[in-house]
Length: 348
Image (cartoon, rainbow, N blue to C red; front, top):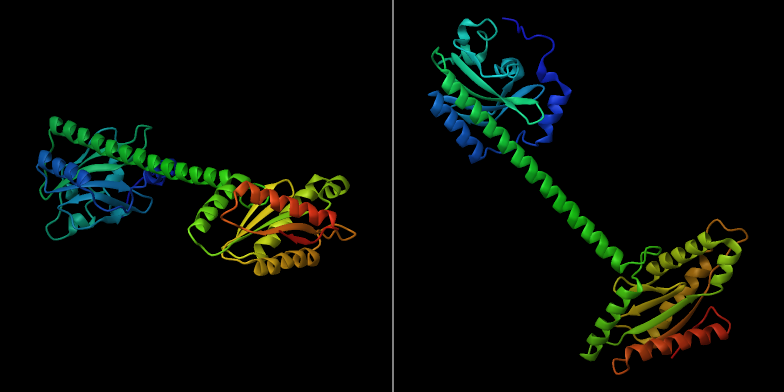
């Protein structure tokens, strides 16, 4: 027999389907809490089959299925799609005698189902997601009292779905909070403009390396680097070009230094590099590579070409020397490089 469902089928309602999707329940595993409600429905209604049925746009899917082997059936074989039109329990005393359902597989199969009662699953905002329904192999009726109990169990199904939705939202909020905390941690230790370690983070790493050196670790070196004529770049080309110059220098340094090295923006146009397990000779080679990288990469978009240079102070990181003294020596070496003509490295 042809399906006689009216064209305004609520199963096709976009808002209802969106409401169903918000719960994220479709195709989830069976769960005891839902199974127990289906068991209760079957017990109260004295029915061998009890289902928690959720209606998608092409199928009805069962979150709980007691006495029924399938997890879903096509929507055109669904009695529940009629039940969701009702404000109360929808009852079909004998499916075989109802022209809407007599041709359904559950009715024509061996050991057919004949009786149906379904209580709609109505969300707090009024959308009907499906039904809590019971079926029997014999035609019958359902008392008003039992119908009320079936409706009460349907409301418990909705409460479970609301609880799941709240837990999902809370879980998502925790994920977002953790991501925000991570981002804040990164920002707390990172120079926003260059992406290098900021002064606070670099100082912490210096102290850690100093402690390791005191325990006998391999020697390390420190480089203090200051872009030459940086004030002139800002004055002539503007601060936005000055920012681009700092970013270019940071990018070139990432290419030159090893992954184990630590780079930080010390302040303004001044940078520090910590080179663990590195002697002075090796560190001087690295410094020359920085000079060469700057010479080979003019600042993009500037005519005539703007080639940056950098002055450096270099020292062996001595664990017997206080950290503040080491930094003063580096600063002195850096300014010696400036006085001697810039674009050079002075070792102390």
